Image 1: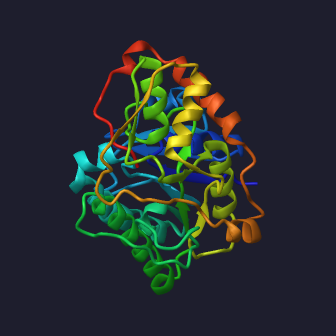
Image 2: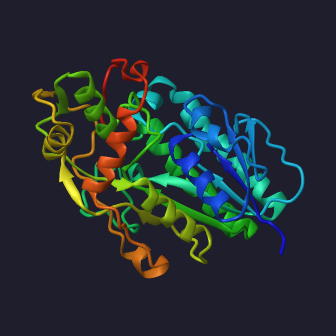
Length: 324
């Protein structure tokens, strides 16, 4: 039996590195590719001596060359936090458009199946709750979040165009809020921001009145859903996330209880176009993939907190915060 080979773009990132681990475990030869703009080699340092792993430092918005056969491609190469895509908006748009185009062309030339990582942000500030895949969204294309939202919407469009016009084998996953070890404390998202503030002894910052909701999925559950989707025969977008919804105010209270911190919760103005509700309808994932999350938030938060506590003090550097 021939060993399968997979290219994971964004392989040094939070999600990409966990996917590298999973496919190494499944017996694949894994090529991780990353520009390291937001990725970190420490996330894959434990794999560098593995004979079934290699790393290529490359920006996928440039021409991509891979020698030999390639069975699968995962596109996880994109900034994913507000701090990042507000700081590098042009690069965010380029990686969603040019980068995806390059990977699709590579998949076509190699006759490889490609899965692209879309996001719940394609639904914008939703007028439908929970969000099912058939919902087209409520997105402001020229707002501050538009560079990320529209990059992902274009990515879905060009992927489906390659599927229908070139008969390319494609898969699209729409990822809802995910958390776990290897997240960056300074990436601006609610969970690492709250834990980082608690570890530094700072008050927890909630934007708006805290009534806006999120649904947090532990990274191991997400990776399992992505793995099943890649190997499935389903070509339309599939939501992968945890439908256990919680308000950000209540979530901040959970973090305070977890960390034992006696700091306060303070409130600031809500950022423009910040989604008020976020909850996936995972009916398709359950029906088509036989998948649903199994790690509850208490267990997942405990594992994530222990990871953050183990980081060196330099990782706790205070940075401006925004929540997605």
